[in-house]
Length: 459
Image (cartoon, rainbow, N blue to C red):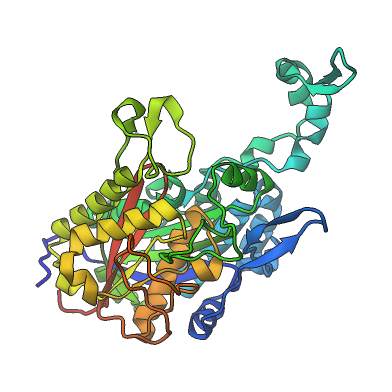
């Protein structure tokens, strides 16, 4: 049985997901039911095909994409759009849609509502830099144009658009959300790449349990289709060399870059019931762990994850395995949950050769032989990899599945890999059970996990 202490129970009362499958919950639900992939190959030109991407084509960044807003909020957000990079626009839109879904407006006094929002680091758009970089160039002795970084302070900065940095700061999603909605409670932002969402959710749950807030808006946003992000991913051998992300599959070779954002509204069960809110699930908690090793202490072998090695640190398949295992064990032990109580596993699996294998090993470490009877699924084959945004979108997909009692399939899984001892769900409709764990992990030795349960008034 699940043991709970005297702390407040925390529930989900609203959600949203903006992904390559669409802008609305119904778009996502339909995509899950159809087993449809939104990943595709785009061509910038006949000679330069971009990697396989999953852009949110339906999202224009215009005010109509932000949901049903009152006139004052519509005016404020429209005015603020010029200070938002695309990732921030996606995050703010997801937040507003989740609040709308929760019928949240005016439900609480402003100091009792907080925000925990996560993102990738956000890269400046190339067009913002053209004039400034041109002002810092000169010809070398061979007559070739060269960029001179030492001229940036004197010649470059003055050519940048005023306030340009505000468009790309990772805390600006949380900032905009709190301002537009007048949420004066605790506010957090996190930047842990793909591991971000469940870490942010864990902070939000503890904030409500401790009584510092009655409600928290939790979300994440990210994009891996920015040209500079694509170049980084290609350099690090992270992008799939075939047409699709293939989670846990023997032929996987990397992920398909994507973009998107998601958000959920958390409330204390007591106050949610008092206001007559619809409760979609209970959140039992979240946990975050990291494992880093010095390069001199690690055998550089095929187990190394494809990433740069900063400050003499390296991140291996074993360190990723430890991080995922530690996050899961901590979460389950703290909440008194046994492996038998887990209905399904909402995996991080994005198609990386080493990272998927590390996740599968960690799951086996935690669940042992019980893993053979626990369904495992991943959404990356359908939406690509939106980086930090993936965790929120996948969590919403898991909550929809729990609501419908029907699991979504892991697309593109065809050939089992001996290094991944899991059996992913491949057809829509398998029963979900009463709970699920969401795993978020990156290739820098960081991982987080969150635990959700079907709502019951009985503790």
